[in-house]
Length: 248
Image 1 (cartoon, rainbow, N blue to C red):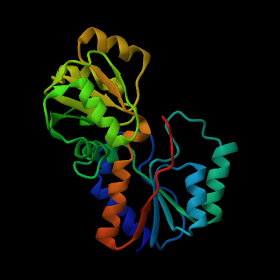
Image 2: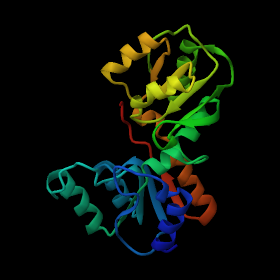
Image 3: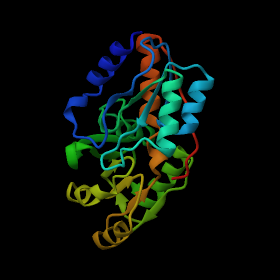
């Protein structure tokens, strides 16, 4: 498959033009023009690049790529080594950030909802990134957190009222603790995200709405994995997802 066709298809599928993002979406580093093998991961770390080189992949497809807003733009140190590895081996780097969070079926939030058994009924937050809906069973927040731990393979942090009955659950993967107040305003009995900040604890205690920090990496494994499966199913590409351990 031609690189330009693959990127154009993903750009349209993930509706890149809809989102104001913190890094460029789509092709970030250009490599060879023909793509047959794609290595998919969450973050374009050196470890992932080394696996792509060793496996002779044509492209690396990730959720967290490069060139973030506000970063030092100089090509030195770790940035130099990563870019040099891609360019030397003619490997494409393709990244989708907010568009991959938000996609209604392949996105991180959609996939986390499927994994957890939550039915999405609405959106909230900046650019409608947050999801709100109903759990499969009405039960205390502590039991919801326990079930989530089993599904994610990671113990989440629950702050606030563990006994509050959860009839409406709101969630947004990754570092979306800043949407907590908007989740409360939307009527959530529980809010789940990947990360937590110091002030989040006080908001959970004072609002009565518990907060679950389930892990940035742990909550964002599923969108890129779904895209890998989509590429195999739709185009017959050899698209492999690799989950590199990250405790955060």
